[in-house]
Image 1: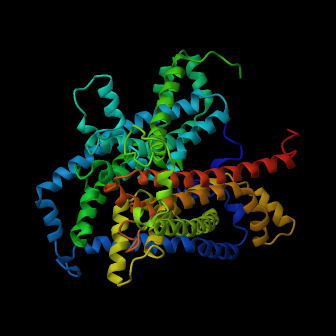
Image 2: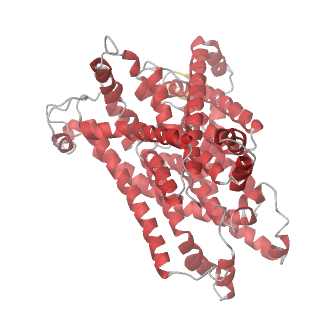
Image 3: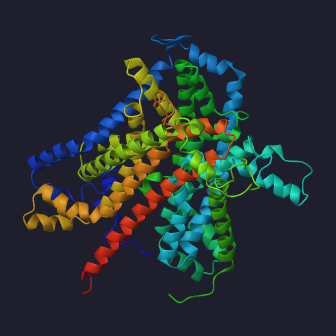
Length: 319
Length: 280
C-alpha cells in the first residue's frame, strides 16, 4: 500500500506548473539553452491540437456568451449586435429568477451533503476496511461501471420504480403502510435529488478514495498505538487528510448539479424548475441573449461556490 | 499482515456498501427485466408474459422513429472522439513533461472546461455557429463540444501516467541509439498502452452518453441520448426499455472489451517475466 518509491513529485509536470521543484532538475536539463528552445518548440507542436480544440470550442464560445449577454433581441431574429443591459435587467426583475436560483442552490446543498457523506464512508470502506488490493479494485470497478453507461437510461430506469403504479408504490400498498399511491415519488423534487445522488456519488467516491490511498499507514498505526479508537482515527486522522479529495469531488458535484437540465427534465417531468432548465427553455425559443445573461449569472454563482471551497481547502496539494 | 478480527464498523460499512450497489444497479436491472415484457405488457410490473417482442420492435421503423440513424451517428461520433481524445491527450501529455511557456494557462483552461456547467458550453458553441452562419451538425459543432468534455479526462489521465513514468527507460533507449520517434514508438507507447486503452474508453463512452453539451450544438439530427430523452416523454410501450437494455449492453460490451484488453497486456508482461528488483 506504500507509494511506489519512483512515484510522484520527482517527474511531476504539475509540480512544475505549481512552481515547486522547478530548480531541482535544472542542471540535468539545462545542458544548452539552444536545445531547450528547440524542445519547447516541439512541446508547442505537441500541445497544439489540444490547445486548438479548447480555443475554438471552449474559450471562443464562452467569450461569445459574455458578449451575446449584452446583445439586444427581438422575436424572429436571433442576434442583434449591440450593447444593452436589458437582458440582465430582465433576469433580475423577474421574481421567478430568484425562486429558480433558490431551488437550484437547495438541490446543490442537499445533494452535496448526501453525496459527500455517502462518498466518504464508501471510500473509507474501500480504502481502509478491505485488506486485499484485488477486492479493492473489483469493488471500486463495481461502483464505476454505471458511470460508463447511458445517463438518460439510468434516469429513465427510475420511472417504473417510482411511478404511480411503480414497484415502490405497489410494495407500500401491499404491506399496507400507505392508503393510496404516493404521488411525490416521481416527477418531484425528491425524484430529482434521488437522480442526482444516483448519478454523482461516484464523483465523490473516486477523488476521496484517491486521497485516502495516499495517507501514510504509519499515521493510523501511531494513532491507534496512542489509544485512539477506530472512530477517533476516522475523525481526527483520516477525515482531515482526505479534505482535498472531498473538495475535488464537491467541485464536480456542484458544477454538475448547478448546470443540470436533463435530470430535472426527465425526473422532474415539468413540475420542477432549475436554472439550467430555464436556460434550456429560453434557448428552445431561440432567445440567445437572455439565455446568455442567465448563463453568466449561473457561471458567476458556480465560480463563487468553487472559490469558497478552494479558499477552505488547498486543492493543489492533490495535483 | 496478521489477520486480526474485523472491527464492528466493518460490518456496518459492508452493509452500507451492499445497499449502495443495489441502489446503483437496481433501476437498470428493473428496466432490463421489463424489456422482456410480453407483447401485451405495459410500462410497469407485473410482467405480462415473457418475450423478446419489444426487442423485435426495435427493428420496425414505425415504432421507434429515427433511432437507428441516431445510433449510427452516436457510434460514429464516439469513434471519432475516441481517436482524437487518445491522440491529442497523449501528445499534450508529452508536451506537459517539458516546461513550455503557457503550460499553466492551458492546464487551467482544461480544468475550467471540466467544471464549466455544460449548458453554458453548449449555448456558446450554438451561438458561435449561429453567428458565423455555419449549420450546426454532429460531426462539426457537436464533435467540438464532446472534445471539450473528453479531453480534460484524457489529459488528467496522461498527466497522472507521466507523473509515474520513469525517464530512465527513455534514457536507456537513447543511450542505445534510438531516435526520439523510435523511443516513443518502441518504449513509451508500449509501457503506457493500458492507460491509452483507458483514455480510449473514456473518450468513447463519455461521447456516446453525452447529452448536456450536445443539446444546443448537435443541429437538426439528434444523437442517441437526445433521441432517447425525446422518446421517453411520450413512451407508451416497453420498446424504450428494450432500447435502454440494448444501449446499456453495448456500453458494457465496450467496457468489458477494454478491461480484457488491459488484463491481456498485463498477463503477457507477466509471462515474459522480469528480474528487475530481484537483487535488492
